[in-house]
Amino acid sequence: MIKISKLIHDYIQRDEEGNPAGTVRAIDDVSLNVEPGQFIAILGHNGSGKSTLAKHINALLFPTEGTVWVNGMDTKDQSLLWDIRQTAGMVFQNPDNQIIGQVVEEDVGFGPENMGVPTEKIWERVEESLKAVGMLEYRKKSPNRLSGGQKQRVSIAGVIAMHPKCIVMDEPTAMLDPSGRADVISAARSLNIEENITIILITHFMEEAIQADHVFVMDNGKIAMQGSPREVFSRVEEMQALNLDVPQVTLLGHILRKEGLDIPEGILTKEELAEALAGNKESLL
Amino acid sequence: MFKDITIGQYYQTESLLHSLDPRVKIVGTLAYIISLFVVDSFAGYLVCALFLIVMIRLSNVPVGYIVRGMRAILILLLITMAFNLFLTPGETLVKFGFLKITKQGLAFAVKMAIRLSLLVIGSSLMTLTTTPNQLTDAIESLLNPLKRLRVPVHEIAMMMSIALRFIPILMEETDKIMKAQIARGADFESKNLIKKIQSLVPLLVPLFISAFRRANDLAMAMEARCYRGGAGRTKMKPLVYQGRDQGAYFILLAYFCICVALRLLPLPFLV
Image 1 (cartoon, chains in turn yellow, orange):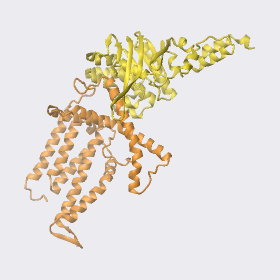
Image 2 (cartoon, chains in turn blue, cyan):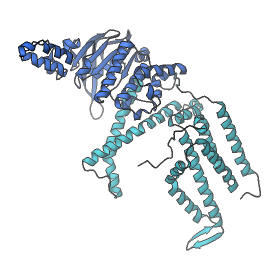
Image 3 (spheres, chains in turn yellow, orange):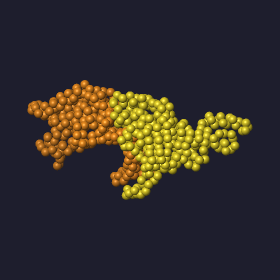
Image 4 (cartoon, one colour):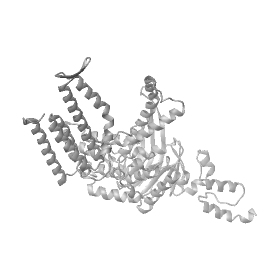
């Protein structure tokens, strides 16, 4: 689905007169592979290069060196630009700054309109997309009247209406409250399972990464760690060295293990922890 | 602070006027404004006023709501009247010192007041019955012939609709910045005009910066959704004329002819 090979991206820094004054390497020799239908999480603290990486997948940025293929299309090929953007949709962080329409349904129709989809088909797509994120009843509302989580789900619907194979979400929950966050993540999850859309979720909330099939941890433009959520989160010390948290349950499990309890590394849910603790009943008494 | 102004706002209800094609309403409003300047007799204004009253009835917008919108232009109306009343030369009726009211001035002032009021009510009726979105669509469609002259019609319409979308967001942002500045001791309540203007600087600078940042984000989001200008774009809600729109054009034409006739025919009973 997505194949990135030895990607390097340099931002050009300019001085006050606008002359180039040097470069900052945002992505440094990153290679990765995403299979169709996967749910991928990319973690990393601010400035680790994860947003820059996301923009490469949507051909909003182009490689300084290396290559990005989206569904076999090289993003450097200008003639494929619109095909790539249609194949890999993108949801951004700020819900207010990505909604174009003044009515929910018109915003969802914006992408298909740009692609030249016939009018009747646009209506069909708008309806099915809003249904997929559970926002159909709000179709006539103004986006300004919606909560952050609802706005973000409208943004996702706007991307689905373009029938993408893959959706890149660049910290879609960073500006939301916890309930809005849960709504957005469950919408993403159900798209992944029901519509088989590849999801690449960029986030710094560790809890959101637990459900992923594969996790990449970025640091300083490089991929520092990768693996299944359990593999990655069981390396608590390494994560902390990268200034990242692990989910609270995982951390608790890790501390208890260090205190001498028989608890496996990489606990991801409360239930797992409870079960592991139940096994320790005797040594506790 | 903009709560009282009903001019330019949309009033949500079901009515014949609401369901008309927005292009008809724009053309109609323009025709109505021109007609107000075509007629110049009280009989003519009576026709214009009657036409407007019928339209208001058809729009289902409460009369009180429209009249409230008039308050915003009351001062303008009074000043215009005063100028016409005192400064028109002619046959003197009353004289206070150097000010005199002439017969012609009186007639002119009254006509001007009627003309202005009808003009404002007429054009606000258009915005009351048409959503901003429909308006921009209609403007795009009406200006389409200008594309041959390389006028970026689609871009203008897109800019208008984005501006409309961001007005409430920027208003909210202004309010937020204002509160943040007040919390740090800024004074927005001062009666002193110079101080008032000075206090706007710490408000406008962050507002502009944030507006540019939003514009940047929005441009990227639009590109990510394959936006590449008007060429090859389809419409989710294309404008299509219905039977009633043709009927409306016909009525407009008839009305306009009556207005022209009132002006041209030398009827003796017209003042």
